[in-house]
Length: 233
Image (cartoon, rainbow, N blue to C red):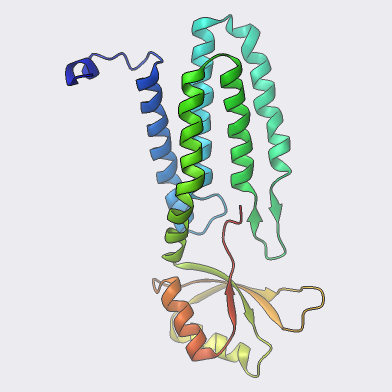
C-alpha cells in the first residue's frame, strides 16, 4: 500500500489496517494513563490501564461490526450480559493483603479481555480477535519489565522494616528526617509465628529514587528492609 492509498483509506470502515490502527491507539492512550499511575505506585498501573483501554476499544469495534452485519438488537443484548457478568468473576480475583496491598487487578482485566475476545470470535469478527489477542499477549509479557523499571524510579516506596533492634525506630525517624523523606504510614505487620518486629512502611522519597534510598537506608540505619511490590498481579 502506497502513501496515497493510505490517505484515501476509509478509517471508519473495519478492516485489518483500521483495526490495527485503533488497537495501537488504544494501547498508546492506555499506556500513557497507566504510566502516570504506575509512577505514583498505584495498584492499577501500566498493564491494567492498557488492557482496559484496549478491551473497551475491542467491545466498541465488535458492536460496530454487529450493526453492520447483523440485527444488532438480537445479538448485542446477550453480549452485554456477558460483559457485565464477567465483572463478578473478575472481582473474585481481586484481593487486599494484610499490608493493604491490592493484588489481582491485571488478572481481572485480562479475564474481562478474554471474555470480550470470545464475543468477538463468536460473532465472526476474526480479524479483530487475532489482532487484539496478539496485542494482549505483548502487553502482559513485554510490559512487565517496563513496569518494574518505572517502579524502580518511583518516588514512593512501600516496604516491610524490621524494628526489633535497639533504637531501630529512632534510627528510622532520624534517617527520614535527615533525607527529607515523608512517612505516609507506619504500622505493625503481624504474621503468625514471626519472631521479628515487622512494620509496614510507606513513604515519599522526595526524588531520591528507590535504589539510592535502599542503599543509604541499609548502610546508615542497619535496619532490615524488604520492598513490597505495588501491584502483585
